[in-house]
Length: 118
Image (cartoon, rainbow, N blue to C red):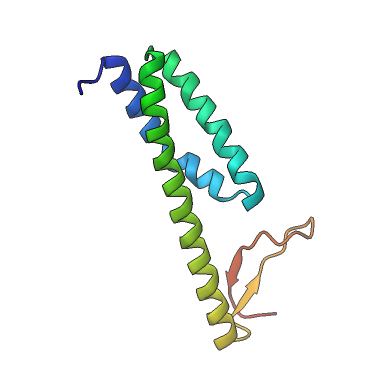
């Protein structure tokens, strides 16, 4: 299948944006990810139209791009889960090595601070 120049431009932009979009969505709580992915899908469809893609082309390319975004979200969640598990093991093996940074509002944003515990 030969791409039109509009389709090629759209796909280049969509694929280039996918890693950052996936990174953002992966940070969302599980219950909000599906909604966020739907919003992204609508925005990609609108972008395809703005790039001059036909409606038929948008119906072909947007779902393919979204599969890539969803795959990246899943990969990033898996990596985060693995890191959290590793951090838990390190914390258990070396108590006093890892502390959690608290923000002024009291929220623990899950940022480990590798330093001697206070």
